[in-house]
Image (tube, rainbow, N blue to C red):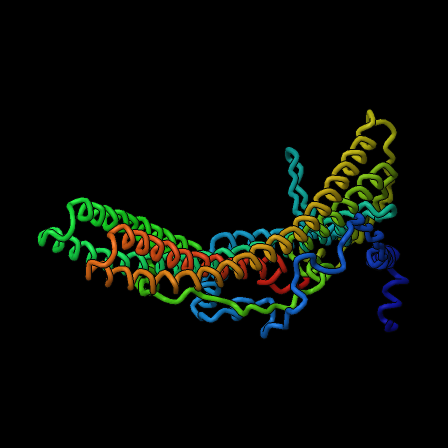
Length: 475
């Protein structure tokens, strides 16, 4: 400190008082207090997945962008667009910004508050000349967090912000999976529509052969009517598939933040049903729980609830306030800027709750009950996560085996239908055989397309269950 400053402090006791006031408030504000991190409830987590195949090998690419594991780049384009423009993601992002801002508001309450005040007064009394008074001062106040109520509130706000960040991740994971499943279902329905049209063409040819045989007296009108029935039944399936295709296109448009119809041109052409690699190295159950955003969110809500219990308990104890004012007063504005008369004050206070009818204690019990709810929600999130993975593994294994058998059946049915039509045209077999082989062919081919789509969706659901589709980052 320079000699000039020291002399000024010796000449001006109020100035020394003001400097001491600001310094003491600043030092007190730097005091650190951190509540203990609450222990999470015990949940029995298995060491390995019950339905996992031991022959699994590692896939390429990170789990965060699991859609790159599929053989269709369009999935990545649609997911990327959805993550940028979907309204649910934008709402979750706004909720995260709000939670972080609220955390900053709570953090600011731990620091001293300082206000600048200026006033000018002019008074007249009868014939007596009026007088003027000018004041300028700084007011400072601070509430020492002796029992940790304010720090607990900050801890709760920080946990809320972390939970909101994980909530955004949960929205992203669910959205990416929903986009992928809708796209796979779209391609599956388009494939089924193509199969129905091919079968309709084949049945129409068979119907014409039947009509020619009836005209030639080689078949009865019963055969002709049965052929017409089969053709009409297949034709009736086509509008259903077309409507399903349109609905999937509309759903994808809305998921990507666009109006229905925007994606019709880009996705109208028939494409192969996307399939992911069959092998997937599963992470351990404990690692999956750490990765899933919904489990992380539940964990942070436990932390927030525990902090609010501490806060409610701390509010039952005395609170302290420290405030001060440092200003200058003068009769003229020029004198005010020149220094005027220094005025300072210091106030220390304590507030002790004596009787509140049991409200403070009841608030503690309420927060403790909220903590128990958070514990239960955390356990439910963990158990649901484990079930999601096991269910996805079961579905994946079942649909994979089913698809193998359906493809074999479809190949055999195609050969049988071709042979039956040729033999019927030669008059070697009854028309009932033709109808049965065509019906079997249509059913098995449709089953292959539907199961292929189900298998792709199973992979998506497994990636979602494993927590893929987001990257954890601190708030």
